[in-house]
Image 1 (cartoon, rainbow, N blue to C red):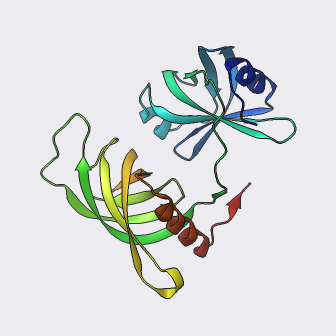
Image 2 (tube, helix red, strand yellow):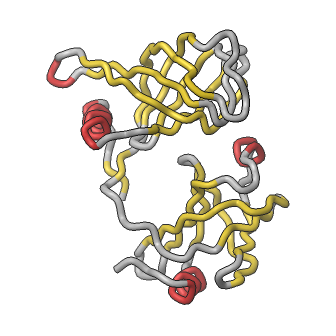
Length: 219
C-alpha cells in the first residue's frame, strides 16, 4: 500500500532505521536532524561531494529513501530548498512514490555517439551544436557521456546508442537532459545525462541491452 498524507510519511521517516538522499543515481548517507511535518526536513549529509555542491536550490528530482526495521524500503520525491552543508533542508513529501519495475545495476560501455545540442534553457544555442562523445556507462534512468563539447547543466541533447539484439545492429535514437558536468584531467567533460521522452519500447531495449552486458537486478 502506498503511504499517503503528511502523518503517514512523518511516521515512516521517524521509524526508519536509515534515511538516504538519492540524486541522479548518487546516494548521500545522512540522518534527519529535524522534521517539520508538511513543511520541511533538515537532513545532515555525511558524504558531501562536488556533484552535490553544483546542484541548485529548488532542484526537483531528489528522492528520500527510508529503510524500515522490517527491511521495507519507502521512497519519497522531494526538493532541495536550502543548502548549508553538511545540512540541507528538503521539501516535506506528501506521499510515497509508487513502486516501479525492478532496477538493474549500471553497466560500463565504450560506445561512440554523435551529440546534438537541441535546447539550452534561458540562452541562445552556441555556434557549435554538434560533436562526438563516448557513452561510458548506462543505466535504466540515464548514462554518462565523455565529450569535448562545452555543454552545461540543463542542456537537452540528442544522442545515439548502438545495441545488438540477437546479433543484429540496431541504433537507438535517444534524448536526454544534462544533469551534471564534470571537468576531467584530459580536458574533456563527463556528462551525467538523464533520459527524456522515453517510451516503453525504448526503455525495454535499453534494459535488455544492459542485461546482455551483464547487468544484475538490484534488490
